[in-house]
Length: 515
Image 1 (spheres, rainbow, N blue to C red):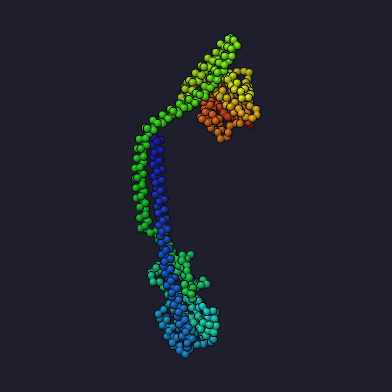
Image 2 (spheres, rainbow, N blue to C red):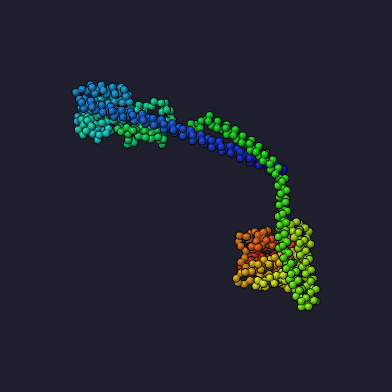
């Protein structure tokens, strides 16, 4: 049931992820439509605005031409032939309906003058002021009425001795009249302003930031044209395109799901085909690795009894040379004992990697410390190290495998001797056996360089070593043997060097715990 629940959760999670991916793809596609539609609308606005700006600039240039022609007629004799001025002005207004008024106002007198289309509004003072302000270029003045219009005022003649103020009234809405229906759309905005920023005309929704802003290319009327288009979500996300995109994404997601399922089936079949062969290869590799580890462990652990056998054999040879045959027998007995110990070690190493029933016995830890002192005393002398042994007078019994406990203490002392070999200063290895309550402690401390910080957490893992020629198995094996005896092996904080502590319950405590 648990496996079925996990499978159901995995499928549900996969479906949720699929839906999330589908939604993400739809949002991305809708974002693309939004950006594309907005770009298209802005491009259309820019193109229409460019055409409008060119057309309005051309019309403004026509206004300048009309002013020039009317000024020439006025200078030639408007006072003698006012009918000629009126005829020409009327013809201009007829062919160019955006010009709604023409006026010729004398600057030196308040009487006289010609006004066409301006009779209802008194613009004489406005025209005179603008003409006197002119320094040669026409002056643009907003019309003083609500209809969006402006006046173009020019002095005539165009010198400081001008006699008239010549003015055209321009209907701004007619000036911006387009040839296409684009500007008839409710979303379009057009704003026309005088060069100083005074607005003349604003058509469309509430104008915001202009998306197009250019001045007219006319030299006499550099009016500013600003346009924009109001964009709403329905414009940027057309219903037909949105529906089409969602349909395509849905079909794509369905096809992808079918393809992924088919691919998963093919991959599962391939994995099942490879699994049987992989199991065989992995089994073989495990046996090879175990064999290599066992060989390294055997070479490492047999060093102790072989060292003892060599030392005893050398001692027997010296005794035989001196003719002291009485003690040779004792030495041979010790050699036999060490040989048996080597055989027992081989048996222990052979069964190290698999569980086995142990036959613990009551062991005096002092005897195990004495074995390490006997076996490693010569090595300490050879490297100039002092081996200090501190044990209590009374027995320290623990329930353990004697050979395994001897191996642990031997390993720790030998590692300590290796640590102090070659250092400058005192080379001291101290083995202290103590009892704290119902626990026996064996502390092995050296004056060496200590354990590096980068391997402290992995110190009891196989193949972790601080020596170039080390196998990395001694501490790992010792840790396992101590744990098997119901104790603990740990690296203790020391002010200098390294200190390892073996902690084992006393024999009586072990029996009570077993009971």
